[in-house]
Length: 103
Image 1 (cartoon, rainbow, N blue to C red):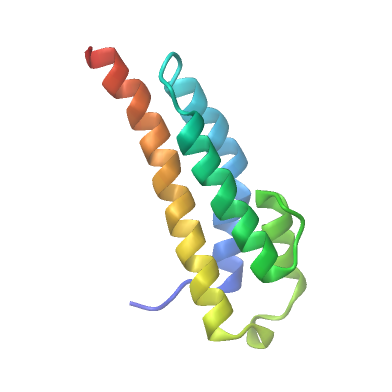
Image 2: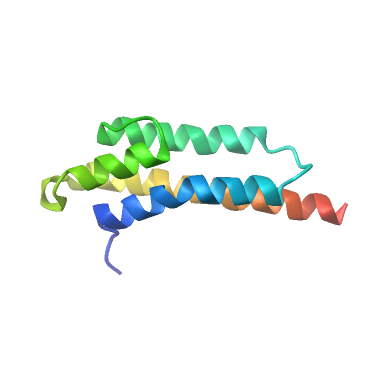
């Protein structure tokens, strides 16, 4: 399986703000502050790696601003890891709401 490109990662980061809103809405009533902090921490770390503004859209903009061939593998691997972790946090936020409905 091939690794995601900078453009793929930019698309993922662009989706995080929308997905965050959806996850928080789905988690209504559940305690998700820690998970939101985890999400924000991964986005901020990715922003630092790519030299972008500390937001999901800032990461996406920075990824798109540089030609794909100019990214080094280590940086992209680290950004991928943060994107994966952010996605996991988003899923856990959504699940927190579903789990609180079961109680």
